[in-house]
Length: 269
Image (cartoon, rainbow, N blue to C red; front, side, top):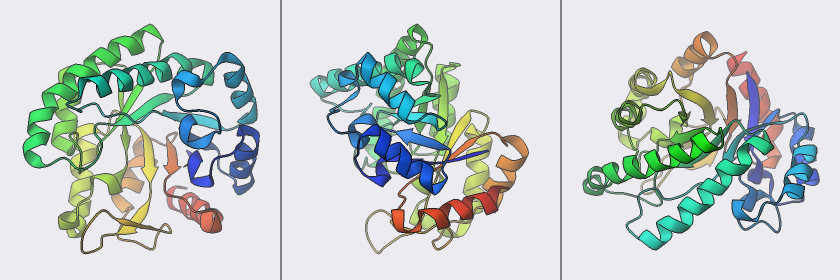
């Protein structure tokens, strides 16, 4: 099992400086979004061959588990979709030279109400099917991340997506806190079982974070082990079924990064 971090949680720096900050803590892998992590990069379309060589050299010894390219698969604005599609395909093109295992995205931007989750789901499938055809061209793999607020919001819908598209190029990033709602905090163990049954086989990356739900809004992040997350079922599943998976810490803060890494190692080893 590899323990990693979302690169831009450390800030936006030259690749060599950023990689060294991550390496100093002891992380072995990264979720790298170039436009959020590296100065001068407005997106994947800006990445040139010399940039790839420089970044790969900078992160030598650190696995690029996910090349993050978060786009809105379900926008109703066709002009926005064309730009997002172009950006995502650019990520697919460079994923192999980057030695990135997956190109990752969520399904939507912002909060999607239930009526629109149902309405937009066929659009997600259609657009994602086209993206998977592009992934075939570049020998790349797409990892979609379910989020309770988005179109791909539940274990059921994620299983439906996987079964409908039936593509070896389509995998899952499982971020438990992103699929947890306030209403299910006290029954989260049952939720984890639902998720594992629905898409556990295709889960290739774990995003790990912790937090608490305020009266309104999304969770408030905190140090691992100090929030609402109960990890036992996920821990037991990963140790038994996926001992080689990469576990990526999200919403990291430099001041307690070493403590979080120690927590991760203690939890999963």
